[in-house]
Length: 96
Image (cartoon, rainbow, N blue to C red; front, side):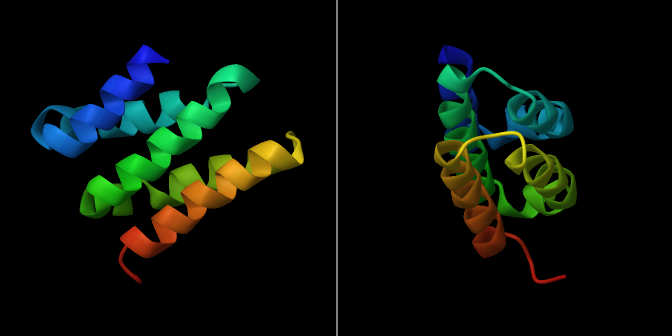
């Protein structure tokens, strides 16, 4: 969970460090399966979408597809967290 907190901090304060590794970071955060960490990973993705909106445009389809795939695998609690991320992405990404 400390790593996810660090990613949120980098997204907000040091985008130049995070941007070159954004693709791998998105994949790593979405693939976290343990329910104890899942909520934190969803919050991290929402935070990344809010602070890295232009860079996340390129990753929006990838992240959205992976999240939508996981919706069927999870309970309602996790679906609400995924809705939070998809909502943040929808507000932050360009309409194209």
